[in-house]
Image (tube, rainbow, N blue to C red):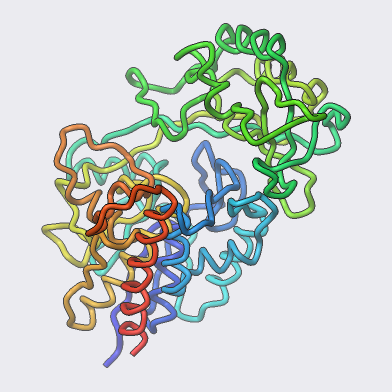
Amino acid sequence: MSKPNVTVVGAGLAGAEAAYRLATRGYPVTLYEMKPYKRTPAHKCDGFAELVCSNSLRSDRLENAVGLLKEEMRILGSLVMEAADATRVPAGGALAVDREGFSAYITDALQACANITVVHEEATALPNGPAIVATGPLTSDAMSEAIERRFGASLHFYDAAAPIVTYDSLEHDRVFAASRYDRGSDYLNCPMTREEYFAFYRALVEAETAPLHSFETPRVFEGCMPVEVMAKRGELTLAYGPLKPVGLTFNGVRPFAVVQLRRDNADGSLYNIVGFQTNLKFSEQKRVFGMIPGLAHAEYARYGVMHRNTFLQSPKLLRFDYSLKDDPLLCFAGQMTGVEGYIESAASGLLAAIELIEKLEGREPIDFASATAIGALGHYVSEYNGGDFQPMNVTFGIMDPLSERVRSKQERGQKLSERALLRVRDIAQRLSR
């Protein structure tokens, strides 16, 4: 008996992950992707799974929840994790990738898959199931209208991206290579004296921001807060936040503050200014960020930008497997569901595809449960009880607690990871039969 065709809308991280899982399990997939004929304001390249903000996928350590999520995805056969591991660039304890190489790896894998038919056009209506809609936080106007016609108004927040500068334009005598606590030398560091920090701070809080194409006062997501907004919370907020100098010394002395630069591509010609998501005008970015030691003559490969992201009222609409409560063969995935972050987005696409396959083959969805990171995300977006549902990065806080009390944060993270990986390995074995 032939398997039904599955529609996947959107070839970002979630859609790419979902399409690949379905196709490699023998399901014909029609993958809709509107690039290159139409782009959102944040997209710049034609490839699939474009990283529009940072090139960092965050921590790769198992005592961290996102590190656990990555390992769970590796066990489950994630294409995104395969691509990330193949295109990683040095970033200390984090997993960062060459963004162009990462996108190319996933694009090539999907285009080479015989079961995937790519349709380069904008989807303007919700498809009939079986389908997975993963149009992202910058869903096109036509699809947004289709979603709102069915479900009512979507929620929204504003997201920001940090600038990227060229390596050759840095003042190399004013920066030093090091990771915090002597964990290698993967970052470039711009040390600031107290005087330099406060001069920078005053210029930053007084700088002119770019106008938003907004309809109301923007709601800024805490995880991607513009640096100028963060600075206005207090004159030392940055010094205790993204510019904290702990674990770093320069010429034997700990600086008052440190701006870190992280490699953005494999050959090291581009660097991302860590934590500097911004909505300053481009000219203001050049002026104010030029006050950072080492960046006086920096050339910008990309200025920081801010854009509107939308997400569903998922607790009212979705089950833990990302399917609609009233239509189990129509699923949503990615940041539009209320998961926040590249890896979380990809994980939701992977889980949605796994669960959809189970249904199509006549089985009940597998509840990974909140004892796992990938399962906890699905339960968070579908079961949040408050009236202020907001996007969520994966954290140990949304996972089931341990049965015993563990005081050490690191040990607690390790035990939570050990428990989760046992369950995911067991599920992966069942799925492979």
